[in-house]
Image (cartoon, rainbow, N blue to C red; front, top):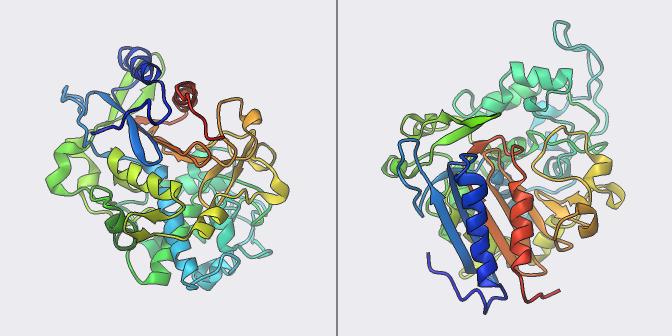
Length: 410
């Protein structure tokens, strides 16, 4: 990968090289991670690139064009796709979700029961709106939250494992048999909201989600290696995936040569189903940094990006005040939430270097990205270790990147 002169872009090149040494010493040499890729850009120009480790458990070396499971880094793509439809007045943010998903018409918050006892009948109250899906204030949840009877019902129905099991319509039918955790708009909870949003994109557009992504986002941006299905011609580029084991080396949990990803997806998970490369996702981040613009045109308009990266939590609250999640891909203090992104609203409260208005997200296999519109910095990090809460590597990378910054735009 060709990189620009780091000094001209306002970075100390020795400190950037120190990030590589840190990753080698703290994560690769210790066996904590099997592979890493890191791309730091400024003003959409690559300032620093690094990759190391192994692509496969058999010792195959990491390669620049490796394909990764980006999991929840799919969510911002789905959110952009939905806002693409909003811009065309196919749907509005304050429309009820039931306008597109009539199955949601009678869905109400938890009233009791669960486990060995049937759920008590719910009463539909405040309608769920599309903005509630985008902000994770819908009342939906994830089974892995492991916190309530509703979470348990998600696990039993295998809601989180839908890729090869159900169609979009079957997915929605299963969800509507389980009550919401709370009335829409009342709280924040990391959830399958973006999966539901992806189904809405399909129903509004009449296209499979992957096709909509390809036509309106991936093809314009040149993201040729990003998709829900692994191209058989590219299967030698897929990285192995690992699971954390306390006190031991990571366990191989998805061997690339035998992965279920080789089979076509029955359900296109807008919340976590994409495969991608670091170069492709850098192109997506460059578009986000440029407020929807790219060399050939515009994916969404600048005012749409302004709306998406504003804090939509009620009263300007942060996640520490609104979240009931045991886990999400965001930190809480000083962090608000926009339409598909975590947004830094108070850098001091995050207790790490950041810019106000910076937005970001990550994926379950420890992948991550952030976009800093003040300093014009983007970062994409790729690896394949589940779960993403295992190590504080995202905080460490942000600290190291900002420590290497010599010229500030702030």
